[in-house]
Image (cartoon, rainbow, N blue to C red):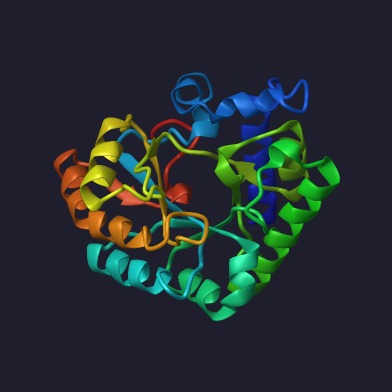
Length: 247
């Protein structure tokens, strides 16, 4: 797995490495539409018949168990981009996510944007999260998604050294907003869908509007109908063929 993750990180890192000429240049990858078109591997574009479902900011005892139960009911597996600080507070829950068949990935130890952080801080934060989550879940994470989706040259270098593949998203529900509802989340996801989509949602409100996770959870049945009508298979990034084209 470690060898696989290093190869995967190197492959995706090479596709975006040319942009990392200065510390701030890669931050432009935060433009969702632009990166989906110009950097599809980084954006998470994969098999057009598959949808990668991802959740950020957990594990959170107040909300993540409800998502795990809902995903069981829908027959879906997903990728959970965990914060080390959250996993440290709920080690048993971090382990449960993996035990229930979901893929675990890294969202950093602290939810802090890399844009104004130096390379030493970024490297320490990423490695601390990787090592902690690997220890708690018994799996070696492959993917890394930086907080706020902001990449810098330091992010890319640290991910490469840590054997992690950076991946953002093509599609989102903007579910962190105070004015989001289950209906707006469904509409935002539908409006930003692309073939081979990677969808960003949140299983915790630790960096979002208080209670916002209820809306995300409530949107899942409608999203299931939307994706079923499109003939899409829903699963984790490991089954998405990111950067590899159709399976």
